[in-house]
Length: 285
Image (cartoon, rainbow, N blue to C red; front, side):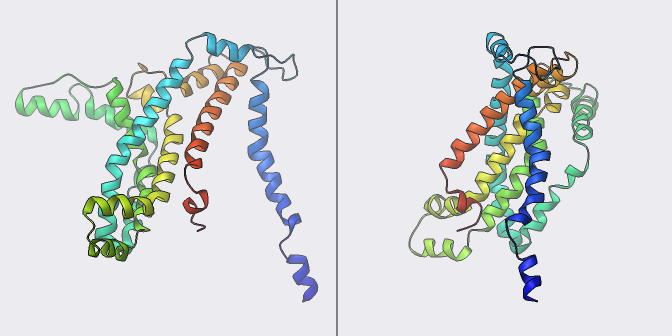
């Protein structure tokens, strides 16, 4: 038995399969993309003379505009969802108690339907003579201008698509605040605003931060909302990357855009995480 215990005792050698899986499935593709970003434009030979021409082309052109659009829309999506989801998460937690997590899971049911199908559903809703405008015209004889293919509808689509990714972790965070702590604060004379600022918000911060980061990272990579609801009036950086890798057949430029996007998003995430105790966010304290 002792020999068997020694054989199956966790040790460094047991981590080798996991490390190989991570190296082949995660690190290797990223390294390949980084290497391709230094290859001469419109070539596929990974071992040609490396240079910085692809990055120079990005900064010398208007490619920074899609970066601004992507980051701006992602930040706006996070802020809007924070305003929407916190009261909903608080209400779900107070009303349903220990069943709050299960109720929140119901909000994830739309994720079982393709994102494109859901977005085209909004097209049918807002299109001329569609569900909304057609109903207004038939009932009141008034048909307002369609808001299709506008920046506002693109933002609305992003808020709709990424709501579950903000709501679920935020509900978990709010549910971590003990009701006894709130009651104790009220008994000591604290106002509702003081309880929110000193008790609710700090104790729920792990879930809130995770919701912010998850939503922001996903929203930066949004492309279907701008294509379908925005009518391509807005060109996000992910669309430029897709175009470079497909229609333009310029893999090095697409790789350079991808590397810059990863650097920008990764830097922003690290800056946010440095302002918080990561062990607390992960529940290790």
